[in-house]
Amino acid sequence: MRDLNDALRAFDVDESVGAMVLTGSEKAFAAGADIKEMKDLEFVKNYKHNFLSDWTGITSIRKPIIAAVNGFALGGGCEVAMMCDMIYAGDKARFGQPEIKLGTIPGAGGTQRLTGLIGKSKAMHLILTGDTITAQEAEAAGLVAKIFPAESLVDEAVKSAEIIAGYSLPSVMMAKEAVNKSLELGLAEGLHLERRLFQATFATKDQKEGMAAFAEKRAPNFTHE
Image 1 (cartoon, rainbow, N blue to C red):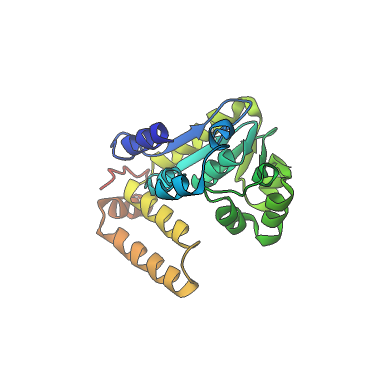
Image 2: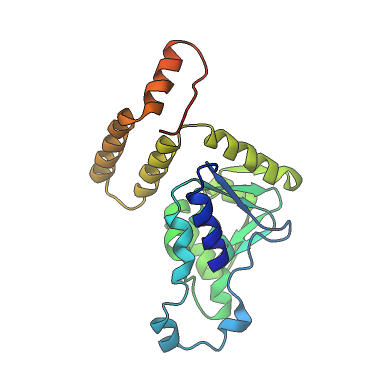
């Protein structure tokens, strides 16, 4: 995860990058934590070193990240996908949090993010039974945004990332912040934040350009300022 976090942070400050796609192989999105390495760990060491805390680095990235999931996204792999801003799935992908089968529970957000995305009952079923769901079931539940044939998944994710990157970066980042905060704030606080961010866009050159282009019936030329 350290290498992934370092790469994402580098892209986050790279002015030539407007959005990112995170993917794995056709067989699996991510392997998750190494079970063989974890099996002999002890509580005190885990607690002192705050084991798995570095996994949340993805959530600090301000530019949008699309998870392009082929094959299995189980355990830590599913948790990494949920840390991204949206999930596109190949038609043969499967999702789940099967940690209960190993005598433990999800430790990198599975109990929290999955519940927020698909609801308590479905999350409880997956986490307590160790069952998995298909890409189609994940889309119906709200975990997955879109499904594509496995062979075209990454290309389709890149197309969406290119569309996003073509918009005003300050507005894209504000929109991402507002949506993510909706999972943490009450309605009144969330609406207050949304309104303030909306008002803040009027301090950008891109808002002036975007609305002027609409009025003049031309394509906008956003400069990300």
